[in-house]
Image (cartoon, rainbow, N blue to C red; front, side, top):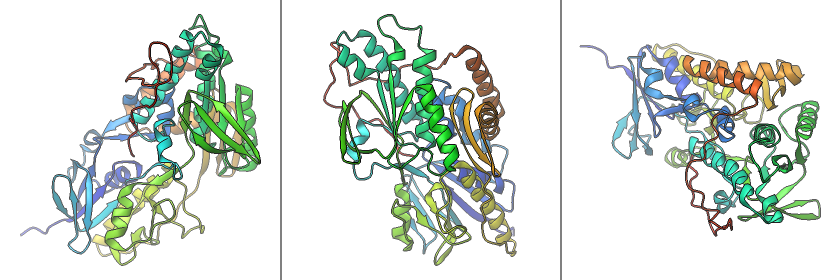
Amino acid sequence: MSKTLHHVVIVGGGFAGLYAAKSLGNGPVKVTLIDKRNFHLFQPLLYQVATGSVSPANISSPLRSILRGYKNVQVLLEEVIGFDPQAQTLKTKGKELHYDSLVVATGVSHHYFGNDHWQQTAPGLKTVEDALEMRRRIFMAFEAAEKEPDPVKRQAWLTFVIVGGGPTGVELAGAIAELAYATLKQDFRNIDTGEAKILLLEGLDRVLPPYPEDLSAKAEASLTKLGVTVKTRTLVTNITDEIVTTKQGEEVEKIAAQTILWAAGVKASGLGRVLAEATGASLDRVGRVIVEPDLSLPNYPNIYVIGDLAHYAHQTGNPLPGIAPVAIQEGEFLAKYLQAKVQGEALPAFSYSDSGNLAVIGQNEAVVNLWGLKLTGPLAWLIWVFAHIYYLIEFDHKLVVMTQWAWSYFTRNRGARLITGEDGRVNQDMEPLAAIPEQVGKA
């Protein structure tokens, strides 16, 4: 009689979950990967979808396609809704599943710091739907401005406010500036897209707060050179359909803008709270699950949380950053750890190898802090390009994205500038409507 294989159930097909599944592939275990989407999304390039540089299909890969070569891995398109750690089962909307080891890696979504009603007016950037919604708003703003006779209203359409000066905010601001001041410069007849105002708002004293101060300063200088107005120590106190209210010290300012994009914070997936309620695990202030040194939960050595959903502070005293390299390393570590455990062996606790950070600002402009080496300018930009191409999952995506970037580099053209969906903000007279239908998905 054959021995029943140890069953590892992985919830979430992002970087952490996917790399765990791939590393367990063809190992001495049975693996079930569950996700409510049928594809893996390369989130670091979502801003390029939002600004018309690449198509969503170029940064998304079907999970079944990625894992087809691993015969011990099954993919289920399901949404997990509950856990029973005593019975070692989880519930989805369609079935109940038993596990020997459970890995939860469902990531994070947008965090509006108690102002969730802002989400309709200021979408975040975590899903394909988010990126397409941003793309629609950005390009519709230029189209609306082209038809608007009133100069005040026209300027509101040509004003873009990005809230949050982390990597996503910096990359969005730089990309929109390149659109307005280069790519779209000759495309309109009634407006000068060079009159667009791109404002980047950051509550702390500098952009890219996790980076060394000198690189933050260089990033801000590069943004300013591109035409972005950077406002640090600036808090957003209210957002309506047309007005962003900010406070800088005692000074209050109201900014008329039709396009407001959110890049200011994240909160953990709601499944983290469901898991915590079932296991008694602790959550941090943004809902991440606090894990043990081996990424397991206290009192449940067969339940693990990895990726952005995990609060792992055993190495530095602070939680690891929510970036792809952390998720990938945790997924690969856990795969080795579980295989060793099944075979009765022991491995040391997880330890993250921090190579550094990189962020792109515009063509030939990026900041890189890798292995203690700080770079800016064209060389940093090339490193950013090849690093992102390297981490794209499938070869055809690497080839297509590299070709598109090369074409865009020489022509300054962005070929994915499609406006899709319905814009509830404008009617035939270009007057704002009362509300925008919510189309933002959760990660």
